[in-house]
Length: 166
Image (cartoon, rainbow, N blue to C red; front, side, top):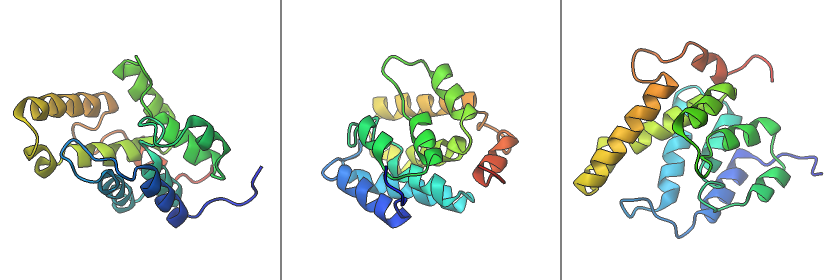
């Protein structure tokens, strides 16, 4: 087993390479979304571990990196746990998905930054109206299930961003 952990810049480079050639629904390079989510985590007070997980948050779900790669990667277990928490599983309902995010320390902040970028009106504006409406409703539903649809969200959110132990 590797003894050293990857640096944040190494994780970023791996994520950019893994998603190379991939585009979002608007045709933009997918790495732009990853960078925006990592920055969203940073400005919300997230840790380097959370930023690393943000860079990797869609890698397993999208098949850019395998689950085996994640399992064997020289990353802290917390990073792996957060990545897996925000990775949707085939056939999984939203309540199970959001429950796992809420149960995994640090994962909520990553999903909050992901939803914020996904729901950015400038990103949504370039989509077909049917797609824009469907995604807007989906993001609102997930935000509601995560307790992010009003006020400051769950009280534990800030505690998860910078846990005292772990």
